Amino acid sequence: MKNPLDNHPYILELIALDKQYEDRRSFHKQCEPLLLKMGSDTEFLKSVVKRNFDDPGFLSQEWTGYNIPFLYVHETEHYNLKLHIFPPEKEGRKNIAAHCIHHHNNYILTTNAFFGSGYETFLFEKNPKVDNNTLETKLKITKHFHQKNVNPSRVESWEPHVVIIPEKLSSTILIWTPDKKRSTDNLRQNPLLKSFKKPLRWLIHKLGLTKNFGIAEEKTYQFYPTKTGYKGIEESDYFAPIKAEKGSVVDNYSAQMIFAFIQRCNIFDIEYFKILLNKPSLPNYYKPWIEKLTSNEPIEDVYHRTEINIPQKTYYTEDIISLDETLLS
Image 1 (tube, rainbow, N blue to C red):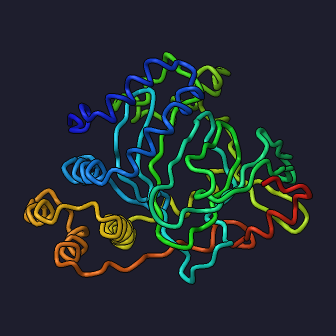
Image 2: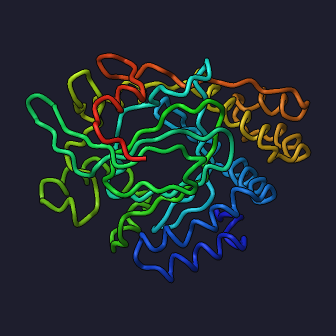
């Protein structure tokens, strides 16, 4: 399906920047003012909403507990522009980690926190080493800030970081790119090759070509604090329970969060959604929330889980700070 935003002035500007700035960090820096404009433009955001609910790919996707509820904006082989939505902690607490400390492999991420409270985050030194026997590792904080105080913000490739659950429902507009342009980037968009993703990764690892293709190492770790230091957990083990969460409960959770955001951000066209309600392509789990939206009935929050797949189940900002003697602000 052709993206209806292809010819929007913001997207044309983004495409021009992508062509002009081969160096990816320079590209991200140049994108910052554009991300701020996008996040403050209600009409543009309404177009983003319509782009998704007119897209059969978005409507037919399978939500899982692993997904951050999102809306697509625009993507090419060189970048991916999206909206991510972050639910609050049920009691409004500020200090609970949303997940393990992790990095995004060779991807750079620049984020504009344009809606809601935003979240607190920590960044850590790159390339921590994990003892394969004890899973012990050493992490050192390089930066600690709240999104609202450093906006837009950036996470570099291979840079461990963590999100603290926000006080209130929040959303970011963000752009992802690999740390450099590679001739293999267009393979990520190839639907045939996507179906062979696992065997291709296995072959790339066996041939020792991991860095050539810019993919994760064969063993990728997430990290968490203990009383005596940090430990690693293999990414596949950590994510296994939430990747297995599928079905009506997850679908309704994701839909409710998306429509709570759309309603509170005031980026919806009532007449558009009234028409959408009668389209057979619309999954049933969206309908109750669209009915609330078009009836001007408040959509309640859903909440972030506070227990994750690590031995102590939950950890806090204080646990991170207590393991680091020199917290940089």
